[in-house]
Length: 437
Image (cartoon, rainbow, N blue to C red; front, top):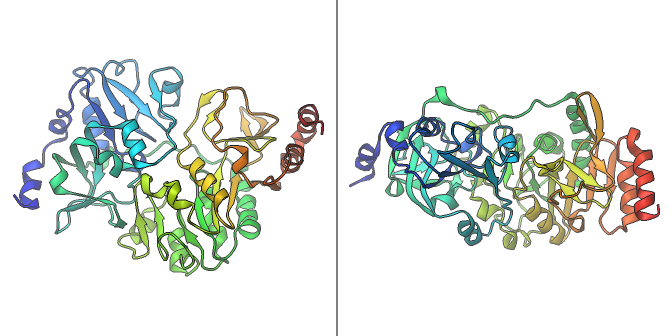
């Protein structure tokens, strides 16, 4: 049977594909922007028939854990969103702190799966389907999937790298319904974040990023806009997990060349694009300098430490006066997840000429009240995403705190200097108690 015959033989309705899931199955659904929405809706419609289906859905736009779905589905995620934060906090799902992306470790932790469903393009002339701008960790899951279902969306682009699956691997295909697109719930950016981002982006680009550096840029409000501020640099490289908007512009302008990369020289390497417009996604289609690889490649510490002048730029929710970073918890609750942030910070710290940079606005507003995001100490029980030993710089809209190689007292002084002015006196009092400042 050739791939064309296999395609016709495997094509079925979403409802028929959803019936391939049985009670007690463990399933993986394409994460984030690779979510198979049409299949997910068909599966949710079976909530009255199924029991104890374990749904691994990371960065999910769907609410899987509700009172009327709890018997049918149990969510497991390593990165929460507004769609499932409350459910995880209420014990209606489980959170898996996954941050070591060595492939054998990941597959042992999460697999095998009875069913894996991802969104793909239609097959090409050789029978290969692409996962578009969003490979993420899907290749790792596909390799431990017993039955693979592809939700075909003709709008998806193709890239180089390992961003594909062959028809010979596929058990079933369904056609994507664009009317069921479910965007990820992204909170609107506040004015304070927009203003802080402009200053932070400028500081990082002008003071901390150098020509010929290779960059990893993390996911988040502040770093997502960083590309705009890098236009005056030369021969930058990109070796990252998530490729933010604006990077293709820098490639086409000759700012990002990858000429001095040690890993994949000349190539922009990531696992997915995030928050980019359709026009930019279209330009990524078979772009000769862009490759998408699975997390277990992009986040492999053994490979990343080979990169010289490697600069990791990541976001934080909060930082304490010793430079401990949390990017995953707030007020004792899981807020997101570590992703590859820990790995990239360690890699940058080990890199010859590397730098580990954390970016965050100095304050957040909750119910009209300002709260400092620089704290004396992280609250008890808060997960530390990046240990203080792997942080070189913390950047807010008030400046750059150089904490690498500093004592605890020196770190606290540096961090107080970039805190919001309204909180500096209080932070200094607490630092006096903690560090005899």
